Image 1 (spheres, rainbow, N blue to C red):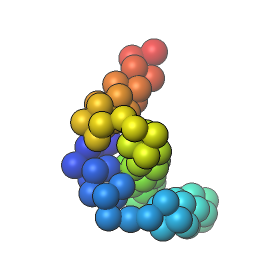
Image 2: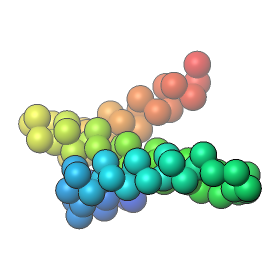
Image 3: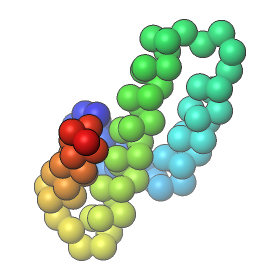
Length: 82
């Protein structure tokens, strides 16, 4: 998870673009022969795209960008700690 990437995704891509990209990556990761390294990279991209979607939704609902990004980061870090 990289907050600067999440910020760039949500600021520069529409919700539809993010969703389509997410669907393509999820299908790609199911292919046989994909290396563990590729799975790690794609997993990181998926996390960043999902973060951009969530941050975008929070900002649209009135949350400040800073609070939305920090809230998402706390949510991810909290799920890792469990």
